[in-house]
Length: 79
Image (cartoon, rainbow, N blue to C red; front, side, top):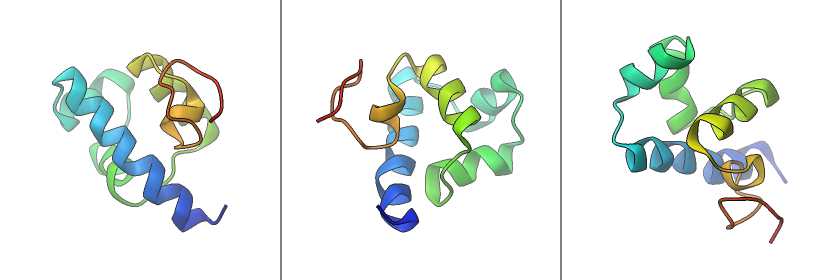
């Protein structure tokens, strides 16, 4: 999978998960200790590092595969 394909799946899922929890970008960035501009890029164009993907998945209560767009099952498993 190309980086652009991964970003096209991952970035909208990160945004959707934040919105599902009803949290503003600034609040989420602060709670996780991320800079706002870095976090904002995760919702639009940048695939987070593996460490950040794990942190975000734990925060959102979903699997890393789901967050990366590799599965449609929020709780785990590959599709």
